[in-house]
Length: 416
Image (cartoon, rainbow, N blue to C red; front, side, top):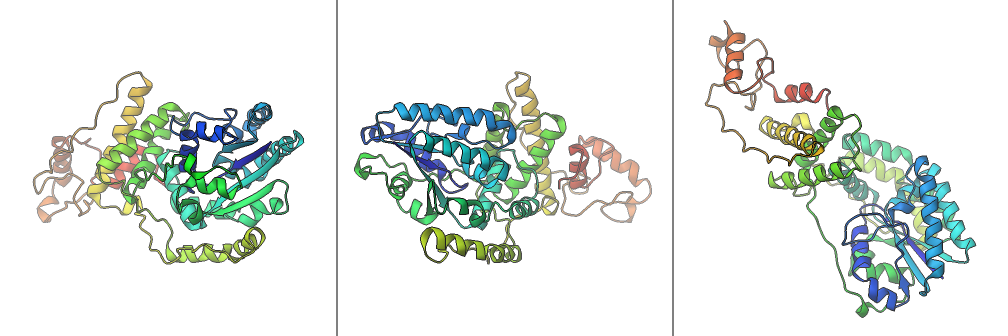
């Protein structure tokens, strides 16, 4: 018996491989390949993911070890001679020294049971990979930091250093296979992955599923959902992004961001200067990794000259800030409604723009506290007139005219 462990990494068409496995369970079994049920997580009916095999913290180790034992029992009793499991979370497990020990112990347990192990990792340039992973984590309400903070932490952790993460596997066991991302997606991903792992399944037996490109958050969408994540944690200190309630809100957020025109993709958090610095830092480890696993130079291009498209929240147009605040506030209300067993209300249409001269806090010209946004006639008694105007517009009398300031007061703290 042989076990192929596909460990990702993140943003390397893992979902396409997992959809391919789910769509081809019967032809794979007929070809001598089983996709075990042990270790599977509930990720939707159209794909298979063995995420329960991946301990992401010390608290997950016991459950993950139990899942690996169940996996060994299942594949040892299977009539097929090859088993395939897949989880992008295993790449995170491999990169963290604390959880790596649990993963290595699990793989040793598989080999002790007389099962050969092949670990397969799909390699993508780290700049694109980390950028996409950030957008995914924001969309899932996991990440609330800015890209600058997130990327700094990731680079500093060493998890982008492929040589550091994978050098213990160069000489095996287990057998380690690194597949460049372009080779995976130049055709059907599952077919290409099985071929790279030396799993002999005739391509004509498999139903290709190809790549799907779900809507990704664009620059304003990232900031809107990041703000939502802050608000949810402010009103619910026990907020859990992995809960079914959080996933419902994340789905609603993506749907409404797309309706607002904020989900067309195109987010790029790296500036050329930052990208060049990180690429230079990774150049040596990447060359060492490529020489060890492919006996060649590093084959992937780093997009260091691509201009950043990220829009810091406080630099967004004031009109967009108003809509972003409304987007986040409505979804917070929906979160509380669903938690209370109430059907979530749909967002109300945006209010009509106020007539020129009214103080709304949404013009592109900032309104100064204690003075008018217009001429000198606003000086005397200006504070009383502003409060009255805000009350007529449905705003609290104490709210400032600047949308960013209102965002910080209602959110309880400034977005980092």
